[in-house]
Image 1 (cartoon, rainbow, N blue to C red):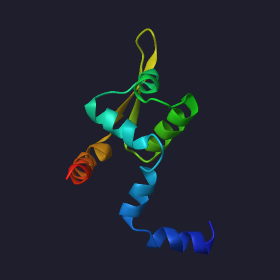
Image 2: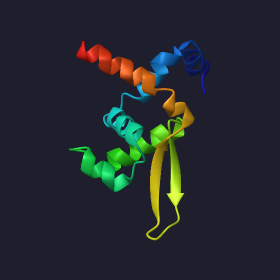
Image 3: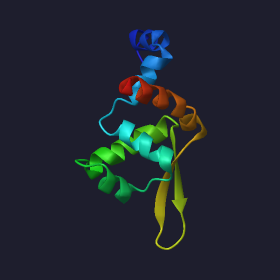
Image 4: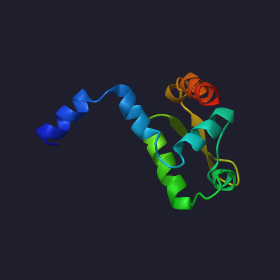
Length: 105
C-alpha cells in the first residue's frame, strides 16, 4: 500500500466508507430483505428484479466481507446457504429506518 493510499484511508470518514459499501447496485435491497429474515441466493434472484447471478454473488460477498451479513451453511438435504444480518448489520437497521423516514417526508 502506498503512503498516499494509506493516508487517504486514515482521513476517510467512517460514514463515507459505509456509504461506499452500501452504494452497490443491489446492496440496499439485499440489506432490507435481510432485515425481514434469512436470505437464500435463489430467493434473491427471484425477489430482486433485473439482478443476475454474478451481481448478487458479488454484493453478498462484499456485505459478508464487511461483516454486515453472516453466511451459514445449512447441512440439511438439500445442502444450502443462508445469509443473515450479523450483529454489526443489525446496528444499521435504525440508520436505514431514518433514511426511509427522510425519503417519505
